[in-house]
Image 1 (cartoon, rainbow, N blue to C red):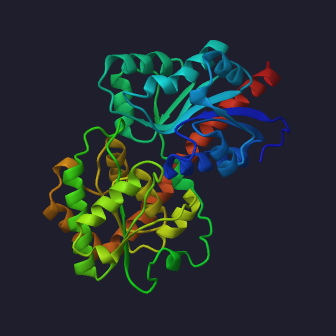
Image 2: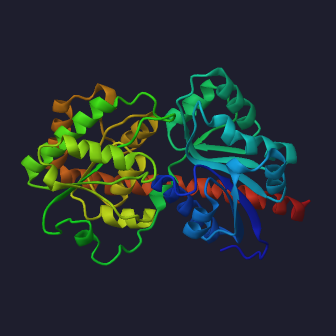
Image 3: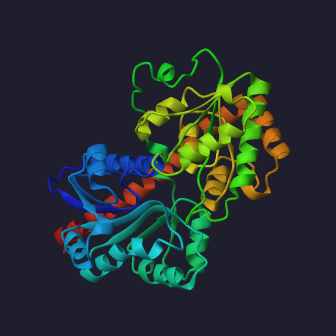
Length: 380
């Protein structure tokens, strides 16, 4: 813990506000690391201020999409550091919205860093140009996978880009409610395989819903037949479409009576704790896979985007893109993962420490930025 009593004012902007448990896992980890390193006053630029204040107990939250440019400028003026990220927030439809505060910070001379972000799809000239303009003036750039670094470089970013790791890898579990499994109608004495799906949207425009619904339904039925397991779908975006798509897949299954969709709301730390109850995890959502791996659960990924591919590569696993996966291929991967589950657990145990060290590096860079000006003042 730093000996200085100065409180540093840090702004964090991302897809926060209870929309996605993966993003909330990112924010929880970021805030925890900052508080463990320095005395900080955290302002979150949030999509839902009430949710953010209740979920994370930060000092301030700002309704970023509901305030004017001038109001945002005044919020940024008071900061010692503005952080963009983490998460996959730089894609065609939303990149310029997220970069508004970055450009205001540059105008005001507030240092900016990106925090283990990913990027894409980025096919339109305007967001690519905006990214180049905004990020080339940042003090520190970090991304969570090499694909993001390559894409930002293709957009014209010439600043050094550090490849670190997703902050959610450092998340700590939280206790589950009493009788959680019974309430969710899950038998604790039966094998349990978790599944994750997601909706198509601006960050995932190429998802073929009919293809993946059929793919996952067949895989879930196979798991029930082959392993005599129950299956549970874990919605990471409850308020969006994960619930609906999970139920749609269950409706296509032959053994739907042995499938459940988690119905209660849980924190990201509780979802991490729940993951430890799984025997295998099969899914699309990045943070479903990350939390499963952190819990030591063998994973089979369905990579719909480069950020998922990046994590699969970090885990030294091989899986083709979702659109190229057939039902037979997926079943073969599940079969192999089950037969090799102890080897996969051992691999995860071997690889996670290095990823966690990379995730801590992002916080170290933030702390360096915050303390640099004060050190220069003392030595100057």
